[in-house]
Image (cartoon, rainbow, N blue to C red; front, side):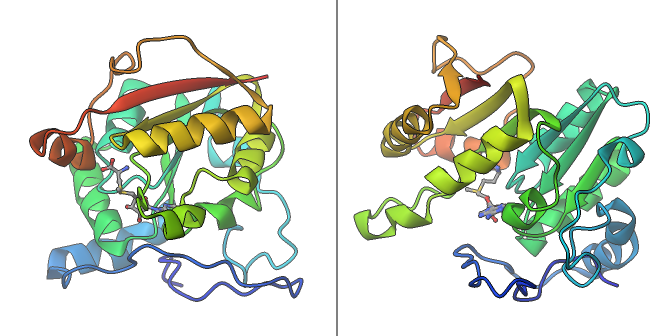
Length: 241
Ligand SMILES: C[S@@+](CC[C@H](N)C(=O)[O-])C[C@H]1O[C@@H](n2cnc3c(N)ncnc32)[C@H](O)[C@@H]1O
């Protein structure tokens, strides 16, 4: 099996498809990137996310996935994986799951992981919502959503990852006191998120200066581009009630 979640997801329960609006592929992969995808990804994929393997959507066993880990954190849409790898290296006692459907990003991440050598990372190379399905309640201590696709046009607002359904899932997965961390360079996305998070009723906003990155912040590829183009990131933290 190739662990790149490249198939249109099948719903065993007959529920509608989930639309995915981003890109799955970019420019042609180099032979080394292709080889990393073919040889490394399966071993990093959490078992039970794939529909064919787990049509009942039974919860996956995180203790077996990360034996001895003091906590498990999730990063949604890790891009090239800069933050995912830096966080894994800085917190070797935490198990970290990353999700990313953009295959070129996953390939970049795999190349960087070869160098960094962190053993506490697992990767779902697909849409985060299919991982949500199989994660048990209150299993996570932290969820990162860093520079989600902005979808700036009014008619595309429904495509934003921060919506009532995804926030309800993030709230379900975080244990009380766990943190949802969001970074974005788009002021309209900040306003949109604050409104949706407040409406969800599940989180307390941490009162910090939103212009100051959180401690140990390593930056991301998308953030570097935003800064070059003169946009100002906001870093928000929310605690699960
Ligand atoms: C603007 S990029 C930011 C990437 C990275 N976080 C960074 O800061 O460099 C947004 C990323 O979110 C990913 N993404 C979009 N929808 C997603 C979903 N449903 N599940 C997981 N990742 C998703 C995209 O593929 C893309 O790589």
